[in-house]
Length: 402
Image 1 (cartoon, rainbow, N blue to C red):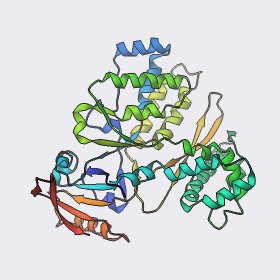
Image 2 (image 1 turned 30 degrees about the horizontal axis):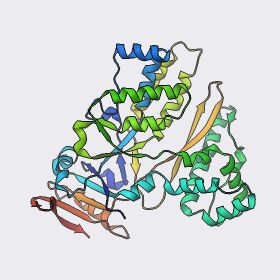
Image 3 (image 1 turned 180 degrees about the horizontal axis):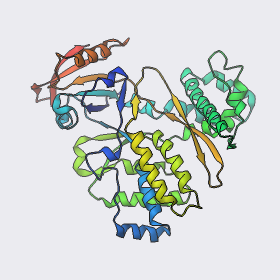
Image 4 (image 1 turned 90 degrees about the horizontal axis):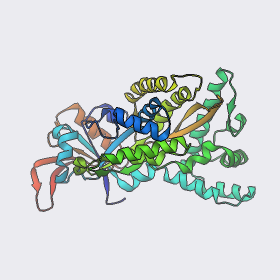
């Protein structure tokens, strides 16, 4: 456990602990209309259109596409720190809300899928010898890795089922039969050759170790042109068919300096973006349609408005990877099968109630029950603003669960 924390301040709603999940927002829902958003006037659209020699409607589509992402905002401040009073006031219902404190190192490990990615890197370093690969798998595959591999295998298998419904052909680097397995610790040895085939050939599994980290410390700036520069490089990479994940994360973690007091970290969630953007790219790639970028942008707005309002991120005691299937279309109109892992959150290490939180309520009993039901109870602490330790710059607090 590290001595560094990430804290999520919020207004309390019973659904949070009933279903162990946070509702995650997007830039369209932020208080600051320029936070993680870019707004181009006609002059800028003309300049970018001339710079890249593409239609202005295509630029507009790239703007919309870039901003389709979900973000969980956390603060590097401890909830008991007096310097967090602004966070309690702005985001936690003026001190009547709640704050969930996570261990920084554990949060990074879980959300970046560190264990899984390290396994894939180590596997790729094994000599191209079947016997050595078998030995490596049997020695180093853990239950966490089995869970994550199964999640991807199931997602790809579901994707095959979807494609069968419309009798379309699909581009996949492994035959369907290779995904008809469900790995367990007991049957790992009997399925080891199938698994080696998938690890060696299936981009759905091999690409796992290239998954970008999801947590970013916010970079504060007083120069709005920084966002425009990032967007230009983003467009250039798209046109060169390059990976834009690094520029998306840079764009989404750049914020006006007036917000510097929040000491914000952002967990970027890409899975809904992948789900929404894929069908819109199909429209945009249809060269026979003269209005393809206008229609793709309109469809993107429609899909995002529906998906964005219903997105949640769960926290779990044990590793619970899930994967979602995605069916895309390449420029030749062929179906392409892929999948991606859905992230989850670790359990909070501490839960704080604000100074105005009413402990004579059903909500308090629900929170207390949640903290007590764990094998290792989660400390439940209530801030008292009238009892402050000015020498140590901290609020006093009362323990309800220790």
